[in-house]
Length: 255
Length: 303
Image (cartoon, rainbow over all chains, first blue to last red; front, side, top):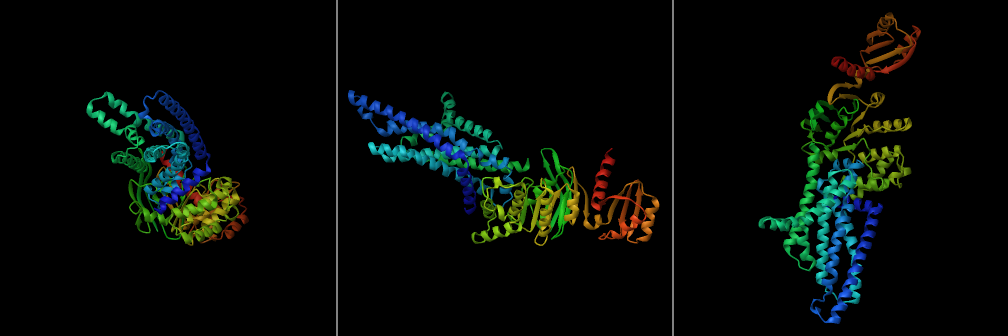
């Protein structure tokens, strides 16, 4: 555990030193702020109309009208941004030849991988926490339900955690950061839309592919439903990605 | 201390290291000598536990490198050819990070850092960012990170490459001083460096072991290059006046000497030659002569 923290601490230091983390945070907040504003304006408009016509009042729900579309949009931004956060993690070690330092130290390979994963996760958690300022405004002027909001945040955090694990794996494959980001992004988007293929296929496939897709698992949590099945899905995905990352290193020794 | 037996390493279908065996005694400094791409780095990487061998065994203090990785990694200090530093950290932060990597206790980290900073003379750049320090300091930092956990075996891949002459001398002095506490293996393609620093040398070419030479062996060999052709009589005269000379062969403008013992004082012989009016242009240390013999013999056989 101590050795995991040694690696994580160093990674955090590197993140804070490089402009990448700041630029990513700034753009993430900018873009998500833009989405938030637009969705809020739309929700306002809809509410006014419903109140005037008196029609559809039972559907008036700030969680559903504001936060759900907002979180759906955030996932799209994360798909683009998180691969940029993770791309340098191993690629840069390889390029700068510092990988030899880590791999000849007595640290276990899994500690190195988990340490790096943890650092990226912490940065991501901070970014996510900053978007909570949007919610603060909503609480100040309205009364949304906190529980579904928290569930949605948990879902978003877990989804991002999976993206980061995939990004880490991609970074271990190459010494080129751009290639790492492209691999991560393509993998994430393919897994995201894999359920589309399932929809037109035979029954058994539809079930499997829908289960594999991120989309079907995120849908529940964004509406405030915690299903252990979804959590197990995310954790399995993270574990698998980290395990594959480890295999990349094991494989390279013999190549 | 270090025993390597029939070691082989294959990459794809290329044998980078092919059936190499040698041993290094405790407290000695040995050099890996050979052209680029000879397999020096690969052999070193196997000894550090970075790469597993396909065949054969490497043992450090009797412990097998490929089966006791965690023990070996603590015993070995390694400086790769490209110094592995994080340029965005300061010297202090980096050394602290390496100390933590090697699991040095919190209380002892400060002491360990002070010790290596003093040993490698890094005091003046201690608080600087690594990206702002010069090549020479970077190399010293590379050595500092390799010795921070007081390893019993020190492996240095091209420790003086890219340095200016003054820095080279400084690093060589430093390496010599490690002899007290560690067994050292270094690679180089500078013959003079090996003769000055090492107790023995392993000559590798195309992944194969060409020769294992000790200081005693190359100390017994000498080549004197002269301005003009040397008379045969000079050779035989030398043999008669100095019983320590076992062989003296004049070949064109070189005089090849072989001694019964390792030679420490050449003055009497030089004096003798000067009196005989031999105009000495260059004296090649024994290793150089032996190295050329080994490498050339190989090429002669091939053609």
